Image 1 (cartoon, helix red, strand yellow):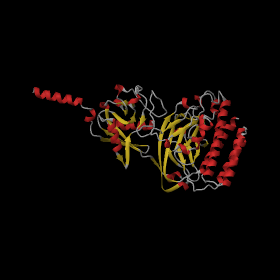
Image 2 (image 1 turned 120 degrees about the horizontal axis):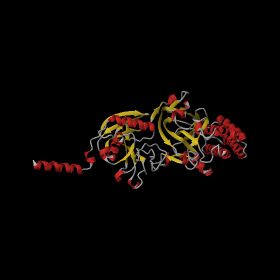
Image 3 (image 1 turned 90 degrees about the vertical axis):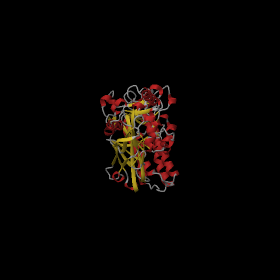
Image 4 (image 1 turned 180 degrees about the vertical axis):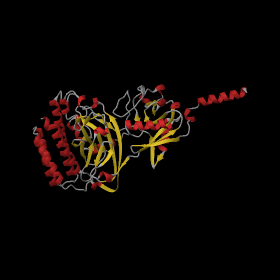
Length: 486
């Protein structure tokens, strides 16, 4: 009996010395669900390491799409994942998701956090960023200097935790990156189609090829007011590939939240015309500060004079996937640092925020113009007017370059080029003399001429749409933000 007891104690001692990962259970699918067009699965696997969970997630597939550990980029997605996790009844409630950091960030527990699927950095209390996060109190803290991965549901709580103690882990959550499918035919119906709650697009029917496809993903961010008017914000850049960086210039700022709608297409051809975009920010971001016509709650401002400030307006914003394809990316910083970036404001009407774009890539909801501290209409009306006049002139310079590029690429002939460049040059001259009504009239002439110009379909660029979108926006900038205040 003594020998049996001794053997039992020896076996128990050996078990306690084994890594807990060796005792982890085989992953078992417990529950699944769909959110915003994407599929999620919760697997039970007590004590599994983050690396093993990550490998299992990447090996999993659903309807031909490989998975990855869930990446949570909005409050709505976070709540859905929490509902799925809590309903799975894991034996230990915490589950791995796709966030990680690196030990070389020590001794700062909150540095270097990022999503595994190239969806950007993760904000922490120690390193606050614009990205969505939901850390539990005093997390991340790197307890025991071993917590380098992200878990959700510690102790059954709703929130995030940096984790390394495998006894707390009951499994992991897999996400399948299928973009939300949008019916392209519906998008050409005249009334348009919804990409995400609060945004409708209307696509020219001539853009549809054979078996066209539109897929949508939406990301939520909260901007840092200290950035506004000071520095660009770069998103989607964790893979060190500059070809998909979203670069928001200093003059565009979240109010305070903003959504980025990533649109990917197959068999759509935008060689002519524009896509109409309409944002209803009170639906997309109901607690944001501004809609296109002004502050949602005027009581939040110092005086009624502030409600006139053109900065306090929601804008339609746009960037092509590769920032190098945006003229703003090469021109902005040469004009002023506040314009350095690739995303641009293309608003052309109000009620809801309305705009025109040339093709698809990144669309913004909830961004407003913000020149930074000291340029509000209440305390510095002269500075406010000067900033919007500078913005209008910058937009004229970009349009001028767009005309030159259309000629260089063969989209327009020499005669059309000569006809189109003249009113833009006159607009810049009138603007520099502060004859803003005359500048507006010149752009209206340009807009009319561009609409009757025959743009070549040979080049794979939509210069007719670009000229239309930019001219519409410049007209709106003059009528809404420059002329009434001068």
